[in-house]
Length: 212
Image (cartoon, rainbow, N blue to C red; front, side, top):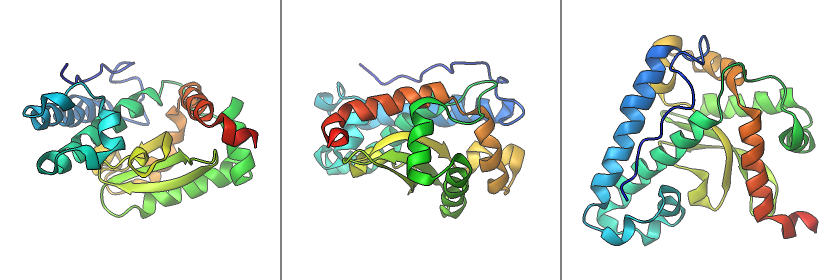
């Protein structure tokens, strides 16, 4: 089955004023749609790969034929990243993280403010296009990291708990070159309920490590 563009879980205007309508339409309808279209095109001559999820494709890129590996890395990565991105935001989101994600942030970084500072700093320092992440490690711990282009922590054996898009198309229409301003505002639309669900999935995969 061909990969498909997921619908936004809210209206284009739902994340105003943090993310404007024009950016949402461009980001979802044009950029994400292009990743899906290009991924399907790359897989056309490899029917055996068409049944794999985009996440499975980028989890083991060495298993992807070399002639389409770059296209799959970029476009399956873009599809996975953005599918997550829309879900981890919501209208009237933000605030301090509650539940398990709040506990993990406090344990690892001391407090939410210090975590935000380190996360935003990693996003600012990502040269060019890319993403900034909170990702789970095989031992059950978490770390902040940034990745270039549409690379996803899955390809490094990590679990993407949540991430923010720092490609210019994610913010330039509203914030121009003021990436730090965008990163600071973005916390006001984070969907902590969805982030907690993703953390729960990660922790379930690493229960033996966490129990030790």
